[in-house]
Image 1 (spheres, rainbow, N blue to C red):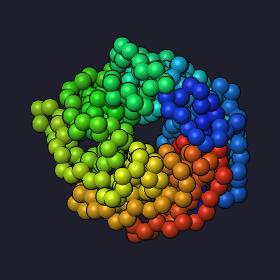
Image 2 (image 1 turned 90 degrees about the vertical axis):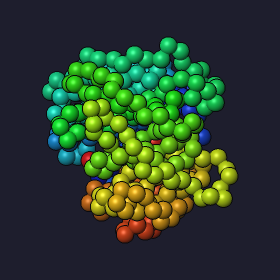
Image 3 (image 1 turned 135 degrees about the vertical axis):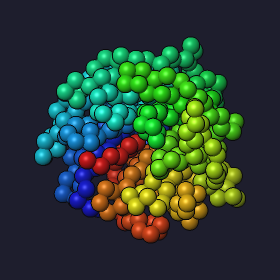
Image 4 (image 1 turned 90 degrees about the horizontal axis):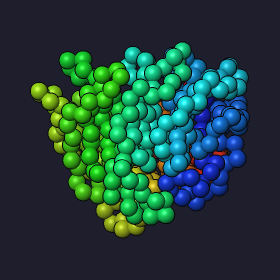
Length: 352
């Protein structure tokens, strides 16, 4: 492993999740890891940390805590020894799953999966405050027992990316896993205004989006595909399909849902994680289209998340249900296994 420092979050309370992990609950759910350090960090009020966003300038982390009963956003600072200090804790919607700072670093946009609520939280000294805007949530909510069967019976927004148009308008793109939509909003600092939607194929289940210039890459959790879309800027923002490509082998008939999608540091390759097939699908980006290079064993079970090292471009995989972090060298589209670190129920990794 390189000297990059990474933070790994883990589930520590399975009972209040929309899904049911099969790994081992982690008593202390935050871990700092580099070549010289393996440091578990306990933070007051931190339960089921499931998404971590690093402030681009300050030594500040925003961590969302996931529960079908509520959601919380923790604001944490750290020193050179990676000692954590809690700066703030604000309530949000249910099953908080995604955080995004706006371009001006004035607001934190928050996506809550269970009730599909999107909220905007102004920053005061970089600390999120109570929301100033809430997109209406679902009228009903699935019960946890049947959720994996019923999750497309209603809206479930899963993530959000901001996109600046050629006319310098800020657009928010939100994949709705429940209704197979990409929602398009105009973001106007203190509110989101719906402007359009893009309908995907039924049972796609869009989860995350990666952006490359005027194209977006959407990983579809439920039908194991990536769809490539071009952003079209006319009187109204629209999306145009360029390509749909599978993340699993043609002859694979077993269970699979996709996890993360990420473009590498060179902007030449894209990787998607497969949960069930337990693999990483590796694509070369050629004039924005994807060419499948290989589908590699992730060396663990249920790769919920992965990221690239900032400097080496190596790949770190959070294999949630085998209780491992697995490390790979990645160069010129080729993935080679390096090592394994035992971590209970890892679900997210971020470079700091």
